Amino acid sequence: MYQVNKKNYLFILELFLVIIYIVLIQIGIKDFSIWDQITYYLSTDFDMNNKVLLHLFEESHPHFLRILIIYFIYQFSLLLSLDVNLVYNLVLLLFLYMTYIFIKNIIIDIYGDVKYSILTILLFYFLLSFFMNGRIIFAIFGNTLLLNAIFFNTYSIKNKINNFKLIFMIVLSLIMTSVSSGTFMVCLLSILIFYFLTTVFSFPFIKKKIFHVEIFIFMLIIFFMPLIIRFINKNLDFYDGSFFKMLEHGFGKYLEVYIYPILIFLFLLPFFLMFGYSLLYNNKYFVLPFSLIISSLFIGLFGYSSLFSGISGYILFVAINFYNTKRIIYCRKKY
Image (cartoon, rainbow, N blue to C red):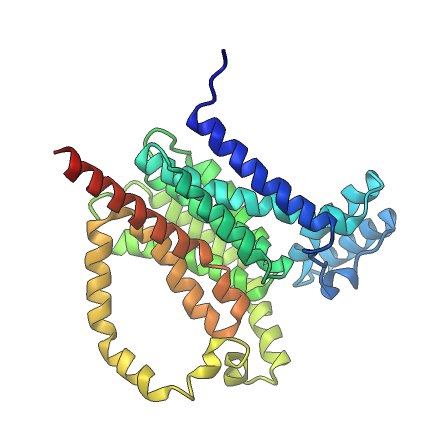
């Protein structure tokens, strides 16, 4: 007789949560709407969408990448005669689930197994999505894909991916996070922080054989530099050329209100950095989520969507701590 093991039970529970979410979409309790920036360019005309996309590509439009992502959803729904909003919602649900899978795979690679408590991460993503727009989900997916790519290239032994796959996944991450200029910068800055930390500081777990990856990262920045400059100029133009007005769009607007606590924090910052270095040095896995957390906090000064796009960094950080603590408790009980 067929026995259902823990992995099968876990998948059944995951599937159950996904089905509940689909039902909520169907009855209209949760509905993601395609944002106006996309509907302005794309329509329910298949051929017209092709012409629009080609035109945007030829003029190097700064929003080309984000329109390209939704373009595939439009064309797929038109080919199958499906409602574009329904397809859009289901794609976002798939991305939410894949985001959870990326985190779960990292935990499995580190600890060899997961408990049913891992489902709290999926449940958390699902609940959090009720307070999000669709764009942030694309960005969260892209940043989590980045975590997954770097982890399995740098840390993993059994499931290590080669540099070509790493490069492909990094580029895909940047494309997915391009739905917003801020979230794109979070992704790019996370890459820079991680490879800066692992190159400049002598972490014992990093083998100095990633120079060719670093060269690619440098070339990637050069490639995206025109887009980065256009993003910055576009945002400055929108806020009348004022850097401080840009801060009002994110949690940077609290800088003026809480200036004295911030000055105290800056005074204590060197001590926090020393503690952080000690933490990263003693637990090799913390460098990766730390890079995304710092990046999202900095870019989050200019936009809340940028801040929340780094949520997977916090989740991975907490998950590693949780499973590490469980392992320590188990070992103490055993011995």
